[in-house]
Every structure is written in C-alpha cells, then in structure tokens.
Image (cartoon, rainbow, N blue to C red; front, side):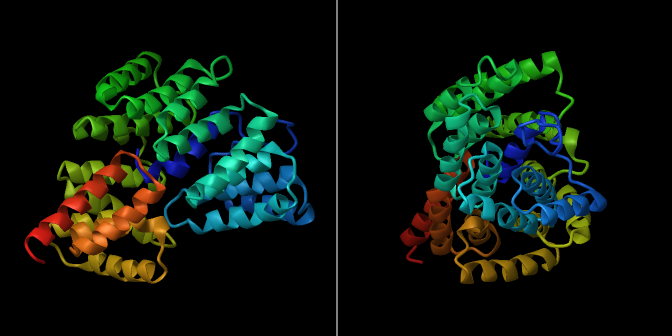
Length: 361
C-alpha cells in the first residue's frame, strides 16, 4: 500500500466507531465525515472558550483531519497539529490526545514521534483498537511486517473478525510476499461473503483489496474495487484510483475525472497534480499540468521537501527525466517509507541511473 494511503487508513480505521461527540463520554476519537462550515465554526468556538479542555480540542483536531483528507485541504493538517500542540507540551495524560497526535505525526512522516504517542495510548489501554491498527500501519511502512502482525493480533477478542483479518492479511502480504495471492483471495472471499461494512471501513477494505490486486498485476480487478467509492473521495483514494487507470492506459479518464476535482479545489495537491501530468504526457497533449507540476517541483526542491520525495522521484523518471535526481529522491523517499511501491520506485530509479551510467550520460 503506497503512501497515499497513510492518513486515510487511520481516518478509516477510526471511523467504524460511533462518531465522537464531546458530551457522550465515548473515549473513541472517531470523526470521519468532514463537518459543515457551521459545525466546524461551532467546534472552533468551543475550543476558544475551552483551550485546555482535551475533549473539545480532540473534537476540533478530528474535524480538521477529516477536512484535510479532501482535495485541496491539506492545510488542515497543520491546523490540527497547532490545536493539539499546547496539550502535548503539557504532557497531558489523555489517550485520545495522544492518538490523534500520532495521526498528525504519521502524516508528517514523523514515525518515531507517532510511535511514542501510540505507546502512551497502549500503556493505558493495551487493546485499544485504533492505536494497535495505527501501530500496525506504521510497522508496515517501516518494513517490519512481523511487528505489524503482532499489533493486529492484539485485537483478537476486542475487534470484529473482518477488521482483525484485514489488518493481519496486510501484514502477512509483506511478511510472506510469495503468499500475496492467497492473502488477496482470503480477504476478497470474506468481503464478498459478508458484504462491505456500512461504515467507513468499507473504504479502507476497498483500498486494501485494490492494493493487493495491483501488487498481483491485476489492475482490472483493482479498478473494479475502486469504482465503488469515487464520489467525494479523498486525495489518497483518488491518487490510488488514478494510478490504476494509468496502468490500464485509461489516461483520458484520469484527465477528465481529476481536472474537475483539482480545478474546483482551493489548492492543488501534489499527488493529484502528478497524476494529471502523467496522463497529459501519455496523451501527448499540451503541457498545462506538466508546467504547473514543474513549478511545484522546483519549489519542493528548494525546500528539500522529503514529504513529497516520491512525487519528485516520479517527476524525474516520467516527466522530466534526470536519473541522478530521480535516484536521490527515490532514496530519500525509501528512507522514510518502505512499502511495495516505494521499493518499486527505488528499483526504477536505480535501473535508470545504471543505464545512463553505462551510456556515459
């Protein structure tokens, strides 16, 4: 599963719980649906009145995170971090605060900080579903599938069978990559038998199944899974969908679908801009999106922005070939995230660089 799944998974895995309400006493900090403007303003007002109240601040941070996953709204990640920071600096003993802080740090690729936050949650509640699922996700990212599976297995007896199975099968797909097809078939069989859940776990499962299918060289099946949740999809979901469509050479579909979304969004997301540029180049069309991407890449390079290293590597492989830069950014990316697509990206960059060296370029 690629990096575009990082934040979405944590939002999804929290979302199968009942929505968080500040007065309910519920200690699960789930809040998936992006709030309306009025609802968000109400939460912000409450946070101003109670700036040190963990329940209120967690509700605000979760509202920001739900908004942040949508196209053009990534600035809300910074707002979530800013809202939580005063409580974190107080080292407040509140597992909900630390769990949402871990989410934010995961998005920033600060995985050590995220794990430290998760540890605080698990010290208080070892079987906490959200914390164990997020821990498993981070272990997969760091190429520690055995630790990931162990985190999944801690959910036995507390989480439902589908959640535990999906979590475990993802870890198993990295622990035993030769058994990937079996992991895919097991999860697909279970989902087909039970049906997709009525909550946001459905999105998580669809993306996981599509990821399994792509890693099994079956983009047609991946496309079929992803077609089920395209309406109001997150940036992560749209980027994954676009990669599948590009693999199927459905380049015009990528341009048609993403152009409308990106044009309407308040800001351009690097992940979607990259897919638009790739589709445009494959179709040999005008360089509108490619030019915009070039400007964005120059800005990222000036800032040495490792958070977008994968996009930079792809740019220098597929848009404006430069094997040395591609290899530099692929290595930078792999230093942080080590999933299947990260390895594939690094291998491509190494091959391109070796080829050019052999040619004396």
